[in-house]
Length: 273
Image: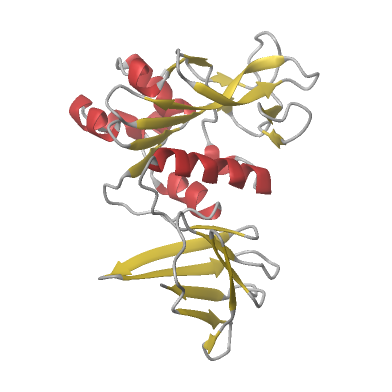
């Protein structure tokens, strides 16, 4: 039977998942969009088709909704009904997500996910990770990428509550790789790494770009901004708690900059280019 929770369509956890992994977000239409959970039910077929012309990130619930609505050939997978970890189905409960290109390492935990969608990739879909049971048996596909016939790109996660995935450097790298894939030939987003809970806020005024990054973690963080193309940094500013704003040094790299002083807890770093 249906419950009030079945009517929940909250974009907050989606934003939290992206921001917590160093990916800026906007509530407005953009070249890359994320559609998680039952929020997928609120859009018309025409609206979904328009999203699928760009880059679209889906979780297991949204992928199942789109599969039932006839969009499997545009998302690259047939997503079955999500299976709870407690479900008594073979091969057993899921436990870890393993990066396909590194079969001897790069493991991520998924055992706190309330459910995972069974993803069945279509021809042309690239599988990035696979889900495994505690004893190493293959449970199914974890996440995958696909280029559809409309020219759009999709990335599908088996996870049904991505915001509850444990934070890790490998998980962040996987998400950043996915964002760059979804951007296609025209990448623009600045991405942030260097510590857990680094929350970015990106703005543009004319030809000037600003990226403000807050350190929501309990420890100082070595902030690094990654750009799709080299840019000349005009200014970096450090805003430490109970201190005046000060100019900060930033070391240039091929794909962006690294803040020279560590960013303290609850501090902000503002990059302008």
